[in-house]
Length: 128
Ligand SMILES: [Zn+2]
Image (cartoon, rainbow, N blue to C red; front, side, top):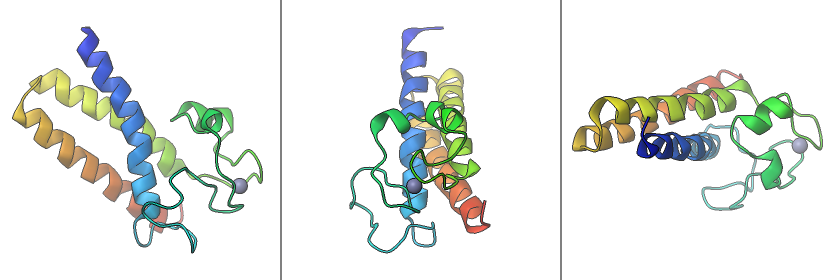
């Protein structure tokens, strides 16, 4: 595969983590009082309030390494986070693989991203 494809997948790997944060901070997404759209800028554990260091915040890898729990307090992170972080690079890489550099890919990118946030929010609201 060409390097651009892997660049898209790598971007999707980071973007999925961002989308999961958007779902967390969306009204009804489970964020505690004091956590808003832009504050804190870094990821925090919603149970203990600790800022999550970068090495515990690598999309997919850290979730698996820490078995889906906060390294400090052991509270569950929830599998929707893992699902979105895993699926986003796949669907974005798939969109690029099918349509290449095009407006269709860009539109799919937006639609798929919105769908990921919607999916994560629905799952989190069901207490997963
Ligand atoms: Zn914690």
